[in-house]
Amino acid sequence: MAVAFDEMTGTDGTIRPAYAELSRWLGQVEPNVLDYRRREAELVFRRIGITFAVHSDVEAQERLIPFDVLPRILAAAEWDIVRLGLEQRVRAINLFIKDIYGRRDILRAGLVPEDLIFQNPVFRPEMNGQRVPYDIYVHIAGIDIVRVDETTFYVLEDNARTPSGVSYMLENREIMLRLFPELFSRHRIAPVENYPEELLATLRSVAPAGGSAAPTVVLLTPGIYNSVYYEHSFLADKLGIELVEGSDLFVKDGGVFMRTTEGPQRVDVIYRRIDDDFLDPLAFRDDSALGVPGLMSAYQAGHVTLANAVGTGIADDKAIYSYMPQIVDFYLKETPILKNVPTWRCREPEHLAYVLDHLDELVVKEVHGSGGYGMLIGPKATTAQLAAFRAKLKTHPTNFIAQPTLALSTCPTCVDEGVAPRHVDLRPFVLTGRDRIRIVPGGLTRVALESGSLVVNSSQGGGTKDTWVLDG
Image 1 (spheres, rainbow, N blue to C red):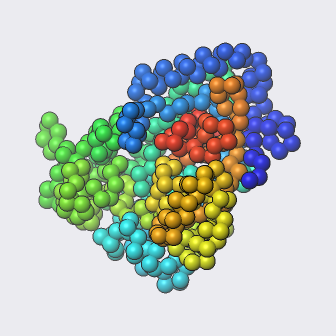
Image 2: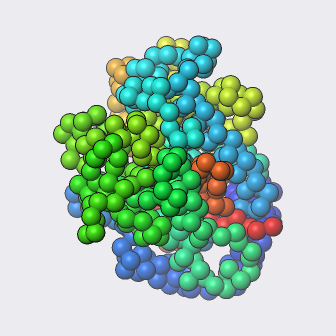
Image 3: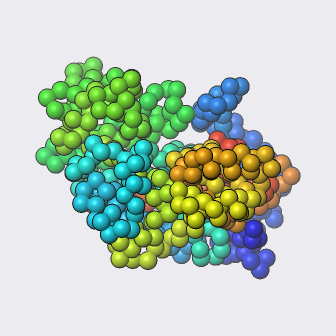
């Protein structure tokens, strides 16, 4: 694997301009100050209850996500590349989903195999021919990006269903402002604090036509046992909207209503954090106690907007991901600004043969996997792990894709032995409304805290950083 690009020191070992002030500050601050503030940040997170659940971990059901007190910094010109690439990609994703459930021009053109769509477990035939308000399917997207040099950014995956993590982006900024005011005073940093206002404006903008002038928006959560329930509660509070469970809503006369102490209240937009399968027991899983009976009929009648739309999981599929350059070109007639990682689709015999011959060099992922689970990092794998994955690939090749091991960029990180480079990725959040696309500058930077590790997911021991985009 190539040597990783370090975002502070660059390729020639000199401090890059965006990090000049941070480097000077690090040269002046006492090491024990960093350690003290790191422990102080942990106390704050613990006191306000910022946790996530790890359901596979019997002994530690609720964990703190480790927070690194050194920010990841992007210059304004760097962010411009990312922002333009995100806008382009999300426009293409929305056009693709509309087409897949509509005319299917891309299938007729032979650019995406039909069986990859119609035999896909996340394809929703219920959405065939279904119009959604303003043709927007993905209102909230979390696009995972990695960097490999000064100007090259790759998209690792698209999260078009119910992307999480934005609460950590907002809390990270608040804690940094509290703990490091002197560091902030040395920089002009673009704000992220307006994300809740931007999200609410986006959601209100896609309310069904002909409804209330002040649309009622609610956040639908599976409940307190969900792994990111904290975020659901946090966002509802920040947006000033009701946090509801399925039992709080009901369908009557084709509309969706919320039970309140003052009687039923009509709901126009549901920001749902429940997967398709559980939304409506009459349409999907009949054993779901999380959803709202009849919700799909109200949705299909155009009486309520769901954000994100039903069926957007087709754009999350990692095999579909491999076609994104063709998707961008087909719908927008543009060259992708953000690169795709070269991808071998194990469903194709030639690709599978290559992957099996080079397994110890590649990263292998489940096409519907998330959170770093079900993944093999070949160069770090043991002989037993390689053998186990080889057997999985031979038995169920359609379940996997493979990619080269990218040299993810590194950033200075506060670890037990001091300040050291650690690999990072970035999840910006893209909001698509009736009027425009909104992206707050920055996003959630995730960091692999173990030396040499490329796995940044919090469920796999990764941490988070505040992401600073320099304002001008």
